[in-house]
Image 1: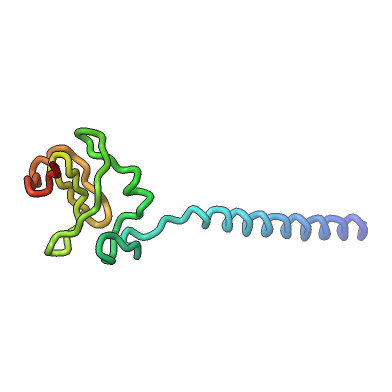
Image 2: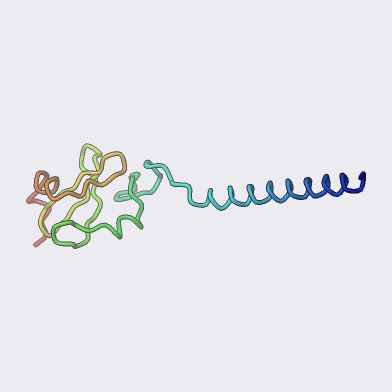
Length: 115
């Protein structure tokens, strides 16, 4: 009877060790996918801080003509995504680009259009 209890005790300790090992490994794998904060330290135009990563900026497209947009900072320090083909400017609020046609039309700037 004592041998059976010892075997059960050893099996319980081994099972607990395996469970702890798997939990730690799962935590490490999950922490790889933690999101970065919305106000990261990427530098955009003119060496200023940018709230949009270059990877995201390369994926974004104007919703109207599906062309690329570029990041600009105005004199007040507000960030905009600009489509130089039609002059539409899309605001960036708290690191989130507001890519709606209505916003672009509302903030249209004729001086941004490249000929």
